[in-house]
Each structure stands twice: as structure tokens, then as C-alpha cells.
Image 1: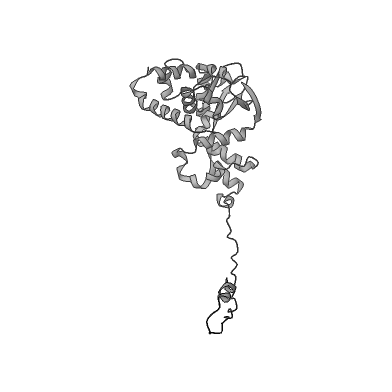
Image 2: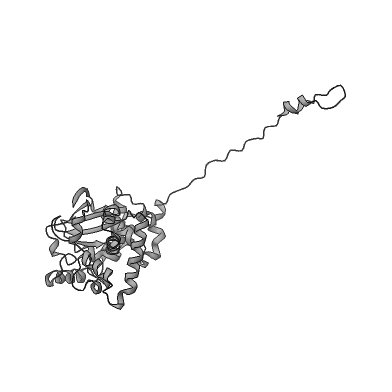
Amino acid sequence: MKKLQRIVEAEVIAEFLRNEFYHPDFHYDREKFERVVLKADLNDELENALRRALLFRRRGHMWRELPPDTEWWLVQVEPQDLTKIRVFPRAHWRKIANGSFYLYDIVRRIRRNDLPPSVKEFIAKIQSLSYRLRREIDTSCVLLIGMDEARPLTILEGNHRLTAAVLASPELVQRQFRVLCGFSPSMNQCCWYQTNFNTLWRYFKNRINNLHNKDAEVSRLLQLQRWTPAAQAVQITAPPITVKAPVIKAPIAEKKNAAGEVSPDAILDSN
């Protein structure tokens, strides 16, 4: 794995939120914040705070588990890196994994069709996405977390896309997606990276302490900052309309021949 560029947390949150913005949790105020999400201005601190609050509405419990010293990097994934990437252990993935969450093991089980009937429909969606990725370019972001480049990595966001890409061809991962990876020496204290009694207990305490989830209070943030989405809307002003007076040409004098008929020269002059 090659580190290409340091990425600020605000950009990672913006990319994470963009991938999540389709969800019903955002339906009731989607239009209000659509521009802030889809056309992020990372230099605007209030917008960054809004995107963080919007993301925390749905994924605050995930983000709080990341160590505070996490550094985010844009990385280039090499073929050998795929052997140490694990899917995020949740929902249907637990049934598919059968004890191993490593991406290659997941893909191997899908190819063998060695899966319980309860996940057949879910796998069909992965297969459909895999076919689409073979035809189309996808520049969306995938988020990984790890302790460093040498040790295992876990997909924080992008299980479906990475699995679908590897299912088609491992080379697709290098051609598709922007891969952002969060590194921290303390990542093994995060239950999303390493699941054990201690990390789950830490997660449980954090959930209890954040039941109110005040970080996701978008309306409170707007009131404090006196910001209204309407003020951020793009104003489209119609250009002034200039009405030009029609140009009226003087009548063409008819050239008549001796017989009183219109001369062909008069017709040529009028053109």
C-alpha cells in the first residue's frame, strides 16, 4: 500500500456522508442540505460542522469509536493488500463470513455459492453491482481503517463495492474508487477493527453516554450559527433583455426597362 496524500477529517466525513445520503434518514430535509452534501466546500467551517452533524445522525456511533489520533490518507491499494482487507462485520456479512471476514474468503464463498438461503437476495445485489463495475467507472470513496500499512485493514464504508469489484477482478480495485485509509496505533481499541470483550464494552459505554446524540443536532447548530440553507442557495439572475428595434430598409427603387417591366438588375440589387 502506498500513501499518496494526507486527507483532512472534514473531507473524509464529506465523502462518507455523500455515500450515505440516499438513506431515508435524510428524506425530510434532503433538499435543504443537498448542496452542502453534494458540493462540499471544505474551506467553510460551518458547512464542515453541518456535514459532521448530518453524518452523526446515522453513523455517529461508528465514528466515535475511531481513535482521536487517527490520520487519514489517500492510498493506492496494491494487489497484495487485498489479502489483508476484511469486510465490516455487520448484518448479512456475518452470515456470509462463516467465521472469516477477510475479503478474499468472502469472495471465495460467493463464487462457490456456499451460502445460506437467507442471503441469496443480498448476494444477487452484489453480483449485479459487480457486473455494473465492469462496465462503468466508479470514483466514489471507500474508507478503510488500520493500525498501519503492514497489518490487516477493515472496511469502514464500502463493503458492497469492494466485494463486487474483487468478485469481478482484483485489478478493478486499483482502477475504481478513491481509497481513504485511517491509521492509528490505537486502532485495535476500536471494535470495528478488533472485536473482543474490551472493545465491545467500550462501545457499549459510548452508546450509553451518547444516547442523546447531541452531535447530530443540526437545528441546534444552525441556531447557534444563525445560518439558513436559503442563504446558501445559488441565486440565478436572468440577464437583462435588450430589445432591438427592427431595421427597416428603404424600398428598392424598381428599375424599369423601356417596356415598363421590372429589370432583372433590380432583383439582383435587392439580394
